[in-house]
Image (cartoon, rainbow, N blue to C red; front, side):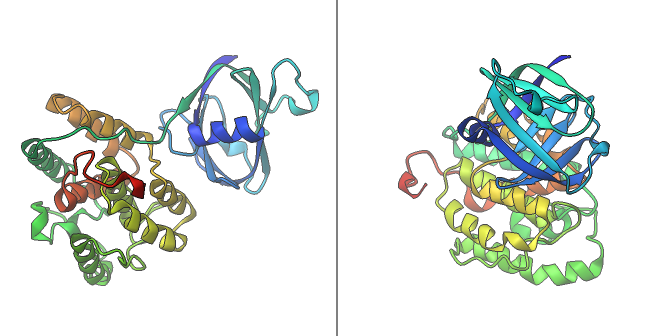
Length: 328
């Protein structure tokens, strides 16, 4: 069967440079599984999942439920004119990468040979200059979008307690005991952002919230993405603080945060900023891109968008050329 695979650029580069990646099965879901490797977590996905910074999109026929947690998985490239029969049993996915064959030995009794492999770049394009009036319009648009699409369990209701964000809610964060716990830490976090504190405290922030990627982790990814996009100097100290505290959250969220500190993001975020780089796009195009972001996870996309909104409100837009690029 001929098909197409999509590889995140870091995986492609690793395979081209070193020829193979050895990993073990970390976790298994209906449409995805995670592999533990020296690169961190590698996600094997099937549609309708979108790419992340260290993922491979496989054909929909792949059945991840047959995988055993802890079992070995090998990704190996060899020249397609010299295939080692030991590396191509019936339980192998094969994909042409230029003049190479990629073997992903999953043990799923499937052999799929791709027509082509595409690379996904998880990096943002540099932001185009934006006028203050356009920034104000964007802030207002995203604020109304967040309010219209509020998500239970997300961080949005707690942000609404801060009047400088100009957002409102009909929701109450639950459970109340967790709201009471995080409120003073969230206040300090926002104060540190306002001051652009290089020693920002994240011990009580990272890991807070429900799910595989807790709400505050998603918010931090969104905030880092805005600082990256606008080339703001505060990206570096915030990214360092995230790295210093990333180990206290879930494995999946840790990987997501560390990718963000390396300026690498999920496909939903890449597509949103591509839309923002077209300032004369109609509102319908922006809404479509925002819809894709908030569709990610239960509340993760909404929390990520909250982080982007905080970036807009607290940091504004720094035109290209203002920031000393040597810091990057």
